[in-house]
Length: 119
Length: 81
Length: 233
Figure 1 (cartoon, helix red, strand yellow):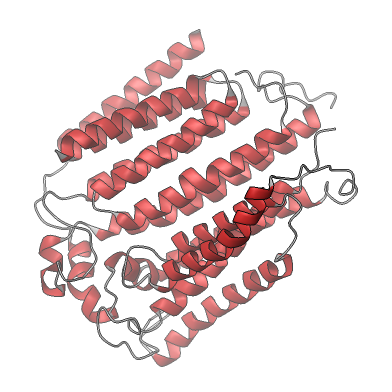
Figure 2 (cartoon, rainbow over the protein chains, first blue to last red; figure 1 turned 90 degrees about the horizontal axis):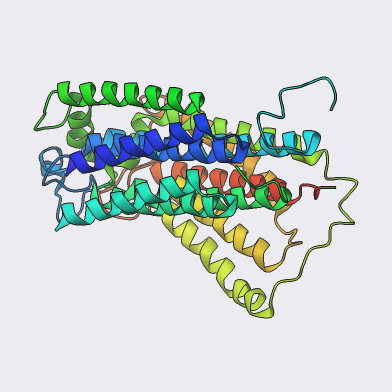
């Protein structure tokens, strides 16, 4: 089961890289970046998954004594939790830069942005 | 049963990713990126990570999409890749 | 065309590297040393039922502080870039009124969404959820308020007050941990109670509530800035 998640995450990373490298519209590149982000998170969470184990939350089904033998790895989950929020912050900064670029140059095509003689 | 469900979700996620990158309309691309996040959050539930699933559902498919749409609204025309 | 070929070659190479890494990883049955420490000692030391919460807030609390700082920096950058263009053109932006159904429904729903967000981060030590999720839910409530009333202006000062105060309290509680307990951001400055009861886990619910308010305020501030940018001239 972990193979499916890892393969899916890796393929999503490749789709994101493909979008970032081949597209010319800046918004499209930012979409590719956010896909890359999501794929990376899926891979990380998939690496922490262990078969036949449950979520790391102590309750009636998971007594505290059995936690280390019956729960999945909590560390990648904690990392991904903060990484998602940071990803949102980075994406919003990228979007605002794209917006400012559009307002000053009136285009989003990276090929047309190359000349910096007149603005 | 669970591996089948996971496979279906991964396929939906990858198709959403391809649509997000390749579709002509930027609006559809942004919505597809939201769909990718939503399916990813269900995948997190299957991978026994409910905390991450809640974060991804609220942030990835909710707020991130809204921010893209706010920026798209400012950028009229010029929407072809 | 050549560009696409290069991209394909790069992706193929990356795929090969990933495949090699995947093939050569050591198959493990149990948890790593760090993870088994967290799962074994976590509930006993922090008295938090949610082990992910105890890792995020206590064991790796400094990382979370840095992460909140990054969020603050992003909100400041966005506010700096978008605020400038907003002043002069504020009056001439015409905003469409939304339908009456949405307006009335949002009056009922927005407080409930805020309440759900507060519930999620107050219960972060017992159930899935916590400051980041609760803060994001609160920001979603702000989005609904914007949709219902595009010129919604309430809560701007509240956001600024929450932004500054919650950051200060976060660091303050962390420093209190140095004097009253074992170290920075130690949660045992308050009585820890029993695993699973609402009043438990020492300072974790307090810190997570502060994080929730902070994240909600920062994301709402980003949304305010994005909404108020000047229309394309």
